[in-house]
Image (cartoon, rainbow, N blue to C red; front, side):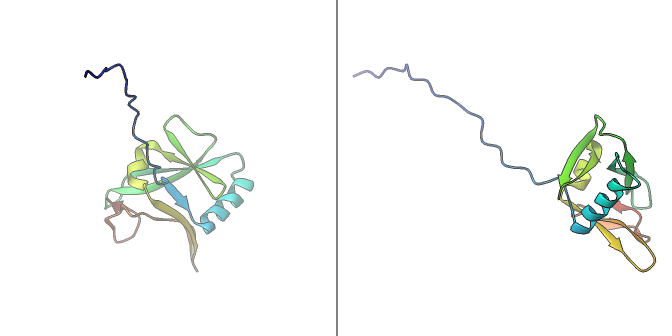
Length: 127
């Protein structure tokens, strides 16, 4: 008895698992960005990058830009869009951006699981 080998087997690529979000926004950060986008920074987007500076080596760098550039990742969370410099993605995976109001200061903060430490003044970090 002979078996014919005319049957073909289709090979398909393995199913890709969903990647975790690059960044998340807290409710306070999303609310603050909505307010900024509606007033002083209407028509602009917040761009987040990581620059080399400070005593620990890296610092968060934020600026408002008119549009996404070719090196930007677009992150939308809670209906709010921010841009992330593609070179900063490995530093920021899993980060949550918050907005804190303290007695003498207020601003965006980052809860970054990739940070291994910060400098004494808290302005820079290392991974």
